[in-house]
Length: 157
Length: 157
Image (cartoon, rainbow over the protein chains, first blue to last red):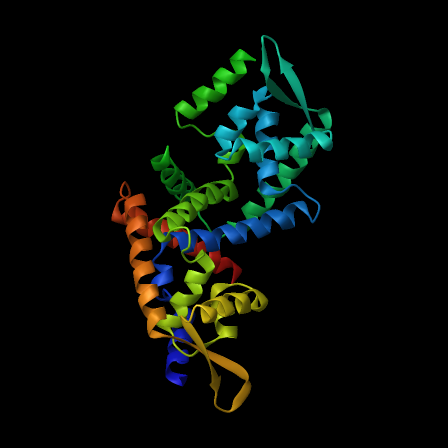
């Protein structure tokens, strides 16, 4: 047993792949995502926005009068899940649902002044934490990583 | 409203960043991770291993006699969470807990023959799905993506 444990230890010390898992994209994505998710929580605090609530608010602030259907599509989540997020944002008075003239089945979403302010504060905190996390990346590496991650998404569309 | 909606639509058609979110690493990681997680489920089926159970089994198969503490450390998860995973694997008779001579507080983990067979089947299925997902990536792009994802993790260590 001692020999096997030693080889596991050495593999990690050398920053060498730990067997099969390190060769899997899903594993590497998960590990990196967990770090960024924890950073996000640190940035916004215990009572801060959950990532998907932040994402929804971001789009509502940037694209006022976006509909729930559009929001669900852009975020790639189920419409049912989105309704709960919008309910949350509306309860906090950060977002308002508004009727769309000529289509009573649809409601448009608009940020309140408090919603815009809360978003700006949260965005700045998240951006600062990401910049710190990526401090050992060159600008080119950051851009390459983003492009390759988007390329994964492009295949599904 | 029509104008704003048109600009959102155009931004997506052009594959241009949809505002602030596309500039955030956390957002891009999450989107890519969700795709790979869904691929993983498709690969293993409804009753297949959850990702973290698969990861634990992978390490137990590759490093027999690994301890629970080591496993938790390598996987970057809490020891309490790991115990539930090992309980699950043991209940399915894929893994056995074994006493460690000279240290009664510690138990080593070893795969059963069924555990090794189940892992080999699952690994092949996951690898095949990942290869399909990355079919539009060059080998160099795949390697660059993996390296940059590991680099994020390296900062935390």
